[in-house]
Image (tube, rainbow, N blue to C red):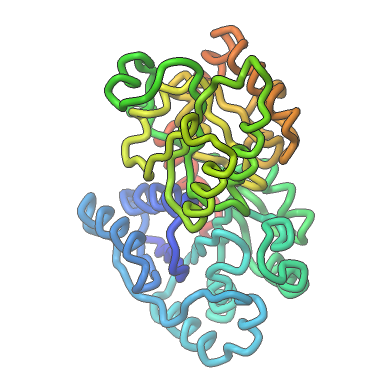
Length: 379
């Protein structure tokens, strides 16, 4: 029986971890694997997911990492000799056949890449984002990028979520095999529903209604760009309303911008919804104006509900969305053109996008491909 150790010492929880944990659950159900998860003891949301997996099957062993990812981790790795030794010793004791490091970006859990190699184990990186720190707007991003090059040469193999990200990994120096396992969703949960009924149930207005769903964080998600652009929309869109769903560090600033622009009557703010399937079908279009993404789950979920999705022409959105529904990141004119294209497109194109999800992006397909990739890379 092969022993797979999943590792994530990040203190935060994001979309890539939500998706990866479905892969961990699938691996845990595989009779040919023994599975262990090493995690940050302070990451309660991640711990809740490991607890749920144990309740499903009971086989997953959970351990706590002796180290935690911090800012400038790529640089810290060079002066973390004791922590590196402690982690390598822990991996030796586990006798792992494959260590899978869950990395939101290249610095996350990066000490484990080095420790796994030092322990003589085969190491895989599961990574949804390969953008530079400078591209992501990180503090001192250009400087931090100069410290990360060696990490792209460390793993024995990679698992990522789109061709765009795979190409980005190659440009950044990754020369080991790269496997693409695109995200999947529960297509029995995300289905078309009657918009009028949902709007009545959710207290949403009649008329043209657009939406944006995700963490309220301007640097990546660009809610402020969308709101500013909305204040200048032309006559045919001027009566449209916007539903903003999410929580995050820029909520207060977003409310301030909305008030300053006089848009309080046209923008509806909602906290993150645990049942987004009750909101997507109420929309005329979902908008993803992000500066960078991996392969957004909200994009697949809305498309499965039969809702047009427009987004910045980058990353997984470039791979998935038809050209008329994409616009250059930060381009207001392009955004308006994409909106018009989405709301005026024939139902056939909307149905076509939904069919792509049903045929290629189910949760079962993701889990199967995740496990198949693990098998392929086991020694």
